[in-house]
Image (cartoon, rainbow, N blue to C red; front, top):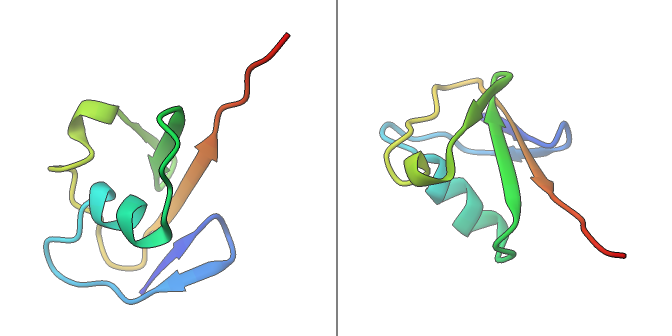
Length: 66
């Protein structure tokens, strides 16, 4: 089991990646930042960065404007 944004619980499976979580949660904005257990994950690593069981995952939508 992993926790996303301190509220959503997702079943964990071996080999689960950041991209799996982003897809499952429906995040489609191109400007997001993801951390796993406090470690910032570079966007280019989303498909290969494996999430450990019981991890805390935070996905932030970055806002911009003027």
